[in-house]
Image 1 (tube, rainbow, N blue to C red):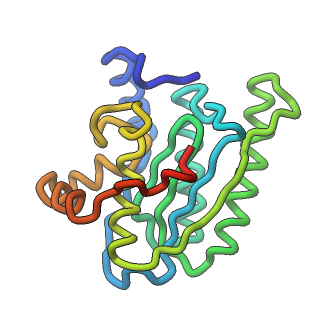
Image 2 (spheres, rainbow, N blue to C red):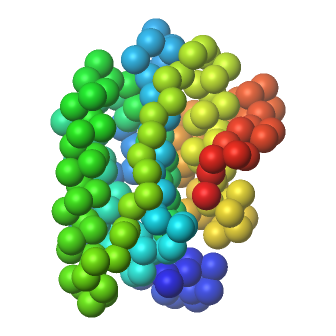
Image 3 (cartoon, rainbow, N blue to C red):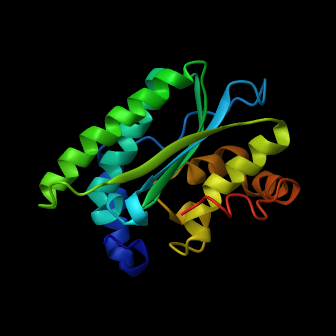
Length: 199
């Protein structure tokens, strides 16, 4: 399993430099108007929470790039995302949720085939589920964004949001500033958000 926690500082720097060299996006600029309408938190998990996505930094990066490519095609805004070794979260605005979910399903099929070939595990079930939750209010939106950005910390991969490279957190912090991000965190706490369904 690919494990960011066990990498040396030099290894982490190499991963980040590879991402910069490939021009990996961090985050689209946030637009906060019309909160609630057509916004969704979309989550997908690997079967039995196996760390299939996290086999290598390259796989994590490729997964992130493809998910963001799909979102850019079917969403009007990408508010936040986080890719972990065994699941992912996307916070988006779209009026094409059915098409978006279909394309994510197609990606799950393609990635399953490719990764099982790479891992010599033909027939392995890679993905367990993908589901969307409609954002109901401004409070729900901000709690969801905090949840997405806090996920690598919650699962023990890093101590700080900005340390996880496969997330929009670092760019979010850069854009709004740490003081404002802290105010948002305190005003819209995560609490037990995702307790019953997050892998």
